[in-house]
Image (cartoon, rainbow, N blue to C red; front, side, top):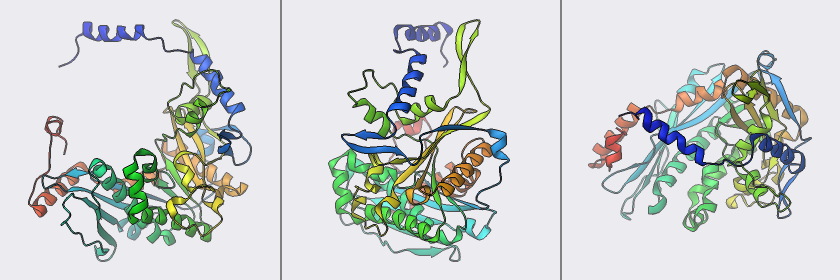
Length: 423
């Protein structure tokens, strides 16, 4: 049943009761103040959390011009992992399944065929056992493993999901590192951000990170992956489609020298204001902002040592994982690109070992800008990896039915699952 017009208007009139605070022009001006006064560097209690790798600068490049630019990296590989999402069964098992795949341009059919599959299993039944050895399937092209998660009833779904996803992705990346000739683009951040965030969420999860070897093993996979690419001189980057970091905005809110409230929910909202080009124009309803959609805009590269990037910084502990190179090599650096055609920002991350070199930094910047310009969104190589790794809705349903048969049980469904036909 849809809303009657009178009900729609009644709801819309509620907006008149809300004073949304500062004028949009004031917010844009405040964003400029932040850019000019607080990001070179940004400190939190005397500790630098964000600083430019080189000069602090914003640039723009015509979408068509950069699309026609010579490719700095002739070949690209992409990596992604897809899951069925955590599923709870009536016998108490909580299971997620992830499969990772790597794409290549030009195409490599043998590489595309390969998969790394991980099933993570949680149960409060201490008698439940799992054979955790790796096995081969598909004529040796693919490998699989089941992993038992210790009892964590409050966080079972989140833990089985994160460990399945990150273990499959990191293992597949390490095993196929030699197949990457010029550049690897991870679909997502450089390090397992979801796992690193556990330490700040709850003492139980922080203890799990310390006491259980599985999370540490996953992070070690990413660290060894970075080391291998550094040793080979082949760059890798993480392309974050939905950046949700709050290091800058959270730090700004604690600044005593700022006498106005920080209006942005996260760093992406701030960078959108900083990178959006346009002008105010007059029309019949008054003044409005008109966005220039002809050019991609982007920032310089920054070093990040705050929030979930802190464990891999020079003063972080990397969850106890030994780092074999100078600690600054592992630090997360990033730049932000804004695509005005969709009003979206993306964050590109890379280890400082690569971005400290001006030539490599520029080549990575041009390559990723060109990818976004051509694809009108995330790089095609990333979408190709996503397509290879994705488990479709019908496949998820079939896999859950297979698990129900295997465990002689059924999925623990709720009324909302029934109502919304969740499979």
